[in-house]
Image 1 (cartoon, helix red, strand yellow):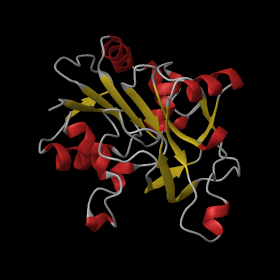
Image 2 (cartoon, rainbow, N blue to C red; image 1 turned 180 degrees about the horizontal axis):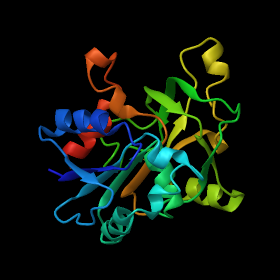
Image 3 (cartoon, rainbow, N blue to C red; image 1 turned 90 degrees about the vertical axis):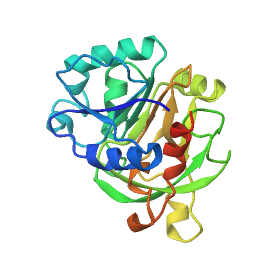
Length: 229
């Protein structure tokens, strides 16, 4: 079973939600790591949760990307370790150069807090093995800067190399189906992988749907996939 650590920056507020999701699937609590620590020895998976690291000053994730722990995360990734960044975690990964592109202000310039639907682009990675390819599932989103963008060449590379992990997808019908890419992300991209598929960044929060008491378990297969690794 993967040994897991969750990073904590000032302003991060989703670390407890993430810890609950990990412990429920793994049967073991993750290690919580303050951003000034640099020892990731023994960890297989590093998770960067959502929130507002350093108050989202400058750009979302820009200050957190300079924290001491992020150099250790880069070393961890370079030696083949797994990394998961959700929401602010995705923003931090792009600011740190571990994933390409950037997360801009939502297309409507408004903070979005609602459920969205995601489609699974592939299920042959450590993060998605318990989903079906093409499966559409529900995930909450809560962000003001979730508009994924990259230059056309990078977008084409992501598509061509199978590095798009999730896309925003239409729901079952009604108005939501007509406006499913609410933040305006390029090509409806909601999450991407690194070239070796060991780093995943995504904007919605699968950790917030891992128990019926939360209103559903649509996000649990991601953590079950990791737990089965």
